[in-house]
Image (cartoon, rainbow, N blue to C red; front, side):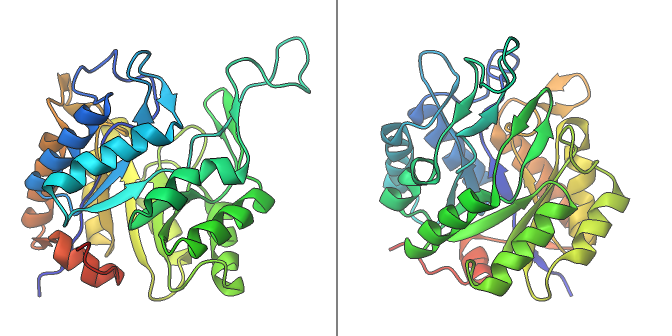
Length: 294
């Protein structure tokens, strides 16, 4: 029997990608339109970062989140909105004094990292479940900060998407579930291919999947050239895929993706080839236990 498979689309992210692919949305209007187009193409969930419209760099400005969300909701009340809480955790040490952050570091407290979630109350927000050497920097998410963020997210009535980049992150997420900081059975995102976390391989995804708590719902993605192989792998293992220009700017080798919608459409074809159905936002709300946004 065909299974309903949700597609999540991460539309812009925080990497330095707008200069490498002009389709990466930057302004709130562009981000909202890209989300709306992705939803039309089959995405049940849209995952949103915001950027400074002048510099294209990642931003934590509540006004940018607010405008993006309002523009989406003006035209589509069904697609599920997932706001990031990742910004505010990037650390580079000062080359002259390793005890101090460099000028490029962006470190913020738990309250500031979730302030937009507390105000806008999206259906979902991400929660990165641990620290990681990420490229040449450190992505810092201490258990103390994560506990405070998880409690705020719970108080706001928002479902946290527990992002796990390696095994320890998954084990901490399970501890949060056991302790009641996160309502069970849990929503997980297995993040693969990021330097230096779990690789984007069938073996790594299977290993992470096998450690998940019983009854949870899970998504997975691979970055760059691993995006679509990991779409197929997630579907085959009983999960749901994430695609989007946050994770990959190419539609195929040597061909830039013209839009987020194009990446969603390709993911949808893979789902259908494998014999499953693309879940609508209404289907996704039922699977996730999230009420209609009316």
